[in-house]
Image 1 (cartoon, rainbow, N blue to C red):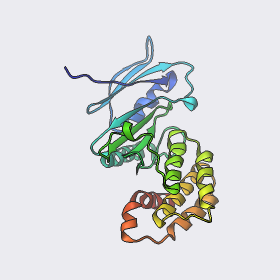
Image 2 (image 1 turned 90 degrees about the vertical axis):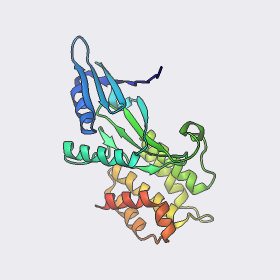
Image 3 (image 1 turned 135 degrees about the vertical axis):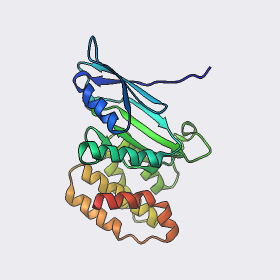
Length: 238
């Protein structure tokens, strides 16, 4: 017998239709939708099934509900999700609700992105890029000060949505005098800092960080290491 786990995620009752529409933008099919005697919906995309139940007084801004989707083609899903969101909303939402974050290689052996629906549920989509499982590597924070900073800032920014906290972590290491990041690390730090500034509404700060990031000179092998940051830089500057 093959078992299957189906996440049940909360939803503010009056937002149910907008949440279903969001998942439709991601390529999910609505296989069940009811508003009475209680709000409930089922959305499916291939083998992935998510069920949503309504709560009258649910507050999306305080939601910690999430689920993890493992895939063998995270880049393909990321492109498909972004395309669907742009077609539905006329833009790719990067902050607020709903939103989709950047795609990047995480220090714990997973290439992933996060997307959050209109009622605050976060769907983490990842692909294992290490022989160990994500669970085995989750606590294996890097030892290098700059790699560790990127690791912690990513967690604060994407998992906790604590943009000021993530910005403080980066600002602290960029002021170091006795240690310096590699060019690839400097680019990654500056791009993430510029991204955070944009999300916090600091257009001038974002512009400065992104311009500085654009001036970082990378060798060919460093460009490969920083490919996600370079793609994000192009997107943010555009």
